[in-house]
Image 1 (cartoon, rainbow, N blue to C red):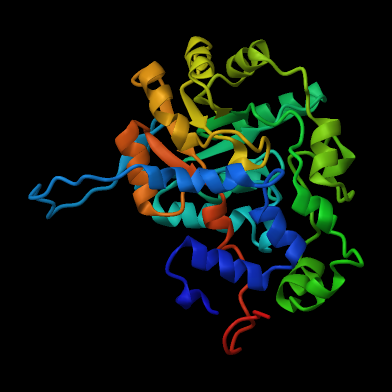
Image 2 (cartoon, rainbow, N blue to C red):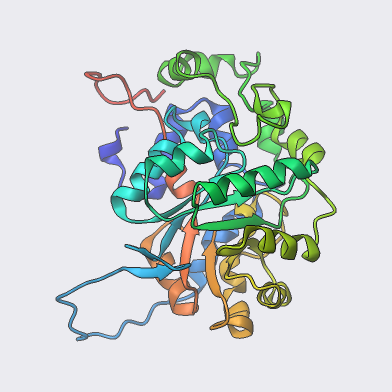
Length: 354
């Protein structure tokens, strides 16, 4: 299977499954518990039909819009995702360049594998920084200050991940950051030589937005569950969010809002946008899908705050349905992570699929 054989996100997912070591693929693809919420995030769009009006005259098509004060060529954001150099050696650099090429918003995570400063210097595309609130207050202040200095366009505070979800695929594979070649997975790494050579021979894996403060950013192997459960501040509340908004002073988004009541509180603390999101189904299995909640949230705060539907987006019609329901834009992470897979060596036929 080759990239040219891929015609939709599911095709890209299958290509990623073939080319990535299984612990890495399962980290991207997996979710909490039975993964019912992850499946529902996409299936929710099937419950709504489109009724087109015809003869509208569309000789000139413009899909551009304004999201959080910056122009975007599409009503779509490439959501911030962690550990991108685990999936492809260029990581956040490649995503940033793609976003600039196509005129899109994108984000990087607190757990990014490329620094705030390098991404800011690399592209002028609109960009957000996704903040996890750590117990180390100095680390939180450092990341906010660095984003200010680097002139990031928005800060997205993740509010649904103060503890780790039970990601059973990661428990089975023993996935860590950076990845360890465990006995159960060594064959998978050995039979994906393109990925393995890139990982071993390219620049050392690190988390440069963290490593000035915590050893978990320097190459110390740790599971994502262990990191979240020991490093993140479980005392984070609405006062914390309001204080971070004030400290940041720029465009401020809350990522992980799922109820109309919380959307109303986001308006009250002065947030500019909310991302209606359940973290890709990776936190609380049994949660409703963002699209399921969208109409209720639009009824509650539409027109007062920008509403971004985050999660489950696999097709353009999903974006269209989110917009028709009242969202300002849609966003997703897996949809672009699946394409961030190692290409076979030049001159080889086909792919490294096995």
